Length: 317
Image 1 (tube, rainbow, N blue to C red):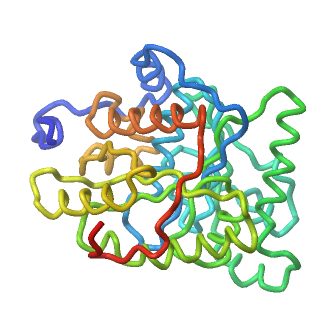
Image 2 (image 1 turned 90 degrees about the vertical axis):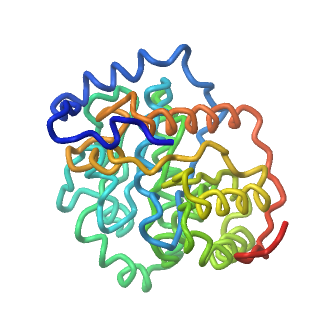
């Protein structure tokens, strides 16, 4: 559904990008009550090997919304492009990011950075060195478990300080390489953003097969818990057909709150912000806030559901 602000002309007023802190406060005030706290840290791998499906956008905006709901949240930028760090306004520090943690040259606690304007949101940034990780990890023993071991160290440290995270979201690269496998091995839940366009379901079978292998051999606790529909344009038959297909195959995993294709969502990262602070009342921000609320509500009594790992695009339910 379109909002008049999404198609505004240059002569109309636009939201000021200068004050993410004040806009975060506005977002917090919109909440009638804090979100439900999970009984233990929920660790999500946000994965889809197809690029351009809104994976990073979904990661940072859900994280921002959870933090606005009073939940202590950490984003780990595991994509060499570093877009999640950029969207959160976190600098890409040389020799002080997730690559150094994976290589064992830095402790994970030392690379955590605060996100401006969010008392409950932190980030571990990516840097250009992360592009070498796929090669450099090959010769390391237990290379698939490097991130899992680091996160375990961090969560134990924070719990001992009575600063335990409620949520950790790992933004994966658009591939099924070693970085994504590390994320799947470290996570307890898999979140898949699916773009509401023709190629959206291409490769989903491959992702689910990778999920199944990781679950069997590396991480039996991993569950496909969440699917989010992104870039939804309700005016098109195609978008509605994709949404209907996902609803029929993944009724338990899908959070049926489609994120609209919106200008504000695309503009926000250029100002080092999420849409939650750039334009808190835009349709995109409202959708992500509702999705985050649903994720938090589901966390109260989360149970795994049977996942159709044999899904193929175009199958009938």
